[in-house]
Image (cartoon, rainbow, N blue to C red; front, side, top):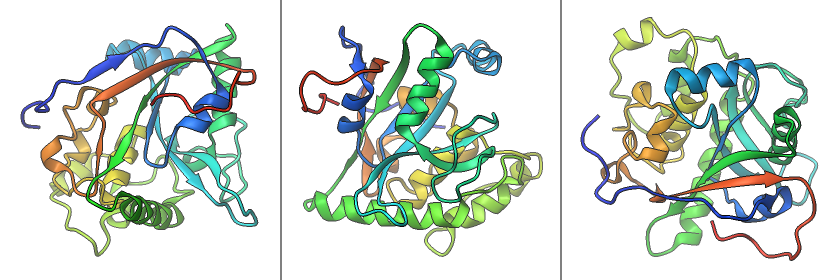
Length: 253
């Protein structure tokens, strides 16, 4: 996958716990959010990968059908059935879906059983002189991609998602032999597909090799692969609890 990033990744662990409302006020479309669950599958993933987190998704502040204000959503692929409905299709299922980030955080807090949960936020920053225009383009690309693949089964052949991900925009430098043995795509691979389809990163991203660590360590998506945006060199590790913020100020993320 090439060398590491030109600037080593930095980890920040704020001493205070953040509330769900503070996190929702601070994250932006394209930011990655990592979760550390307490289910047997989450613990198994952490054991196998020797990593603090077991799941990753992407934030999308999206105006949903029938709404006038944006909802803070999480774009994810999951193989675990829970009670969170997809905000686009209204059903409860595994696979690729768009869910409420607030509901996702509450579910993790309840599942962990100690009144809070650990997350990591990796911000995505637009590049270029007109960053507002770039952000709008990134969001438009993300919305189109979600509308194309949302509801796709977790066990569906990855080649279908690959075709939808690249479409007419770029060509995919992927060995067909890799696809032949891949019968499901993971949360981290969906993030890689999405970053490319948004044009945040180029088609040089090694999608099939991207692991959970790829975005926090900076080893899977390198600065040389950037297009319209770049994941920050700082990973923000928060303890999140329920409750109301003391002030209506976004956190420094």
